[in-house]
Amino acid sequence: MEGSEENICWPIDIFVQKLPKLEVHAHLNGSISLSSLNKLLHKKNSENLEPVKESITFSKRDTLSLTEIEQTVSSFKDRALPHQKTILPCQLESLATCDVIQEFAQDNVHYLELRSTPREVAGQMSRRSYVETVLAAINKSQELGLDIIVKFLLSIDRRNPLAVAEETVHLAKEFMLSSDAMVGIDLSGDPCAGDACSFIPVLSCAKNAGLKLALHLGEVPDKNAECRELLKLFPDRIGHGTFLHSSKGATNDVFSIVCVNQVPLEICLTSNVTSKTVSSYSDHHFNLWYSAGHPCILCTDDKGVFQTSLSNEYLKAAEHYHLNQEQLWNLSYSSIDHCFADSEVKSVLKEKWKQLKNELLPACPEMVN
Ligand SMILES: CNc1ncnc2c1ncn2[C@@H]1O[C@H](COP(=O)(O)O)[C@@H](O)[C@H]1O
Ligand SMILES: [Zn+2]
Image 1 (cartoon, rainbow, N blue to C red):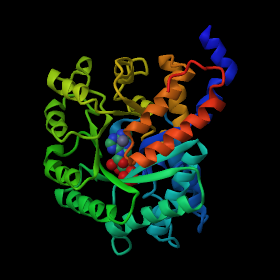
Image 2 (image 1 turned 120 degrees about the vertical axis):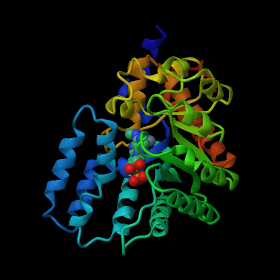
Image 3 (image 1 turned 90 degrees about the vertical axis):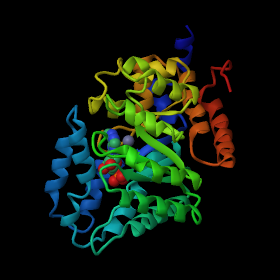
Image 4 (image 1 turned 30 degrees about the vertical axis):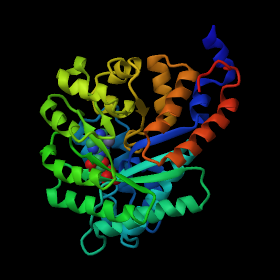
């Protein structure tokens, strides 16, 4: 009966759109939508229909292997770049970043953490200028008056050599001194590639400098040894954590470190099912962790590649795990505690959420705070 009363408030698809949301796991280049990509490609040169059509066909498929995702994500925009003779990589990055931020804002995301791997294009863009460009685009979006706070994490791609990771952390340390937006380091890339443990010293250096750590951990099975070592860093959040539950093959010590420390999990439903690291929504680890009261944050991962939105991820949680509107609101609200903003920003966000609550859940006076 309670459920039917809630439905009187808003239909669920409208509710999830109106719900104020936080996005904390979004890879910049995987978040570029097809419409944005199309726009960028046609900005100066209209001959380049081929790569766009290709991307659309590729990403409309229902499932993608992790390797295919890697190829799609990392070449999503790069495939188009050589055709763009009149626009510089930095300009393209800037436009793409602005579009991604605007799209999240339109989806009622009021706080966004973007992450991206600084990359260089010989003779045209250094890793440093890549970081400067994204930060400038973030500043620009803040000046446009969009109702969204944006932060930035630099990604270490585990396929890259240690020297690149060292340069990445060096850049993050340097830019955090001049920009409030620079908040942390992410470890990502093909989860089967490279030796993630070799990055422990550099990750530790980032943490000691005051940068937050969000690590992709246990994205694929049989990585207990790697997870055990990386968990010794006490990451601030875990990306996916698909195989970190004892019932998903994690050893008891690995499982218990995550539980005891209440390390928040960044949950990407569509991404995991599409990339087949999880066989179905009913088999998704979110079910296990959420029902045990473990901190979970719904995220998109690569909204462009997977053609999703954060509203859609909340809708999926409602559909597959029978979360009611009050639970969805609480899930979004509790995510504020796990974001990488300072306590002042968190207070501002909590205030905003509380104000919006009355409009969103008028018929739910029994709601918890
Ligand atoms: C699907 N699950 C995933 N697992 C691991 N890493 C992922 C990922 N999805 C994306 N990336 C990482 O993000 C990069 C693209 O964004 P940026 O160029 O950095 O902005 C990819 O090349 C990969 O390293
Ligand atoms: Zn990810």
